Image (cartoon, rainbow, N blue to C red; front, side, top):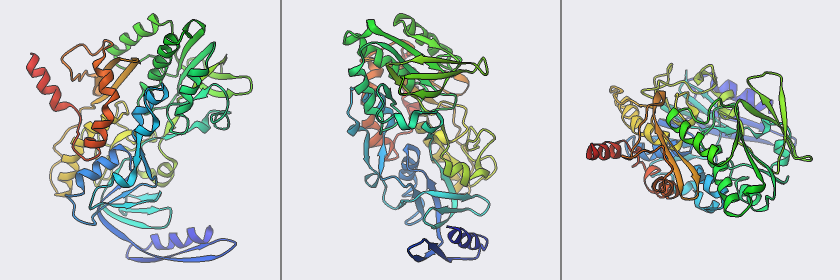
Length: 448
C-alpha cells in the first residue's frame, strides 16, 4: 500500500536507524510490524546452484550468524536433469530436494524475496520489510523465464495439445507426453532471441525426441525442425561442425535467425519473425512445439537493483575476478552475470573456485589473486547413450577434460551426464566441487 511504501522510504533515508516500524494497511485491518536492521558480513541473494554452493563454502569462515542466504523458494531443483526428464529417461522427482535440507549450518536462511538492493548503503530490503546490512554481497539470482513474452503461449502451455517446454518443472513432463502421443507432422524446437541457461538444452530436447521417434517407428512421419534465433548451431566451431553432421544425418531442418513470437493453440500454428529480414514473419503448423522461452534477470533485480546492471541488463562483473565493476564489496556468479561465456551449472562450478579465493581474500583485505578462464561445459546429448561433451572457455578456447576427441558422439559423456546429480547433491552443493580443472591437468599430463 501507499502507507507501507512511504513508511519504508522514511526508514531508509535515515542511515542511523536500527529499529523501524512498518505499517501495512488493507480494507480489513491495520497491522503494525516492528523490525530490526540485521547486520551480516556476507549476504547471498539467490539459492540456486551458485548461492547454495557459496553458502556451503563460506558458512564456516565468516562466523556464526554472519552469513545470510535470501531465497523465497522451498524447493531446490537440479535443472540440467530436465533434458532427460522430458525424454522419459529420468523422473522429475530425481531433480529436486527441500531447500531446508541444503542450507549449511551457521547460515541464516531468509525465506523472502528481495525488492531492493542499495549498493551505496550496503543495504537489502525484502518484500516483508526486513532490512539487511552487509559487508560483502554475493548475487546469484539466475535467470527468470518469460513465457509471457510470447503471445498466446502462457494460457495454452498447461493444457493445449502439442505444447511443451523442458525449461520449467511445471511443463517438463508434457514433453514426454507429447512424444508418446505424436503421430505425424511438424515437431518444432525453438531457441529465443535472448541469452538462455544452457544454450545446448533446446538441441538436446530435439535430438532426444528424434531418437524417440526413430526407436518407436514415428520418424518417417515426423518433420523435425530447429527454429533458432542464433546464426549458428553452436558458438564454438569444433562443436558446430559436429552438430552439423548430426542434423544432416538425421534429416533435421534448421532455420537460423528465426524467433518465436506467437503461438495459436486453436489452429496449432506458431509464428516466427525473421531477424535477418526485419518486419517479415513465417507461420508453421505444428503437431509438437517445444518452446525455449525468452529469459532475463528476475524483475525484482532489474527493478530493485539497477545500479548493479550493465547496459545489457545483466550484473556487471570483472570477467577475471567476478568482482563488480563499480562496487568492490559486491560479487556475482552464474547466469545473472554479464560474463562472456555460456550460462551453465558447469560454469558456476568453475566460478566457485575463483570466488572461494577472491571473495575470501576480500573479506580478509587481501588481493584478488584467482582468475576465471570462462570455463563452461555443455554435454550435448544427441540420443540415448550418445553425447558430444563440449568444454570451452572465453573466446571459444577448448578446455576439454578427457584425453580424447570430445567432438564425437560417445557413450561415456552420456553416462557422466546421467549420473551428474550425484556429484551435484553430494559435492557441489556442499562446497567441494569446483569443476574439472585439476582432473583435466592430471589426465592430459598422463597422456602427453
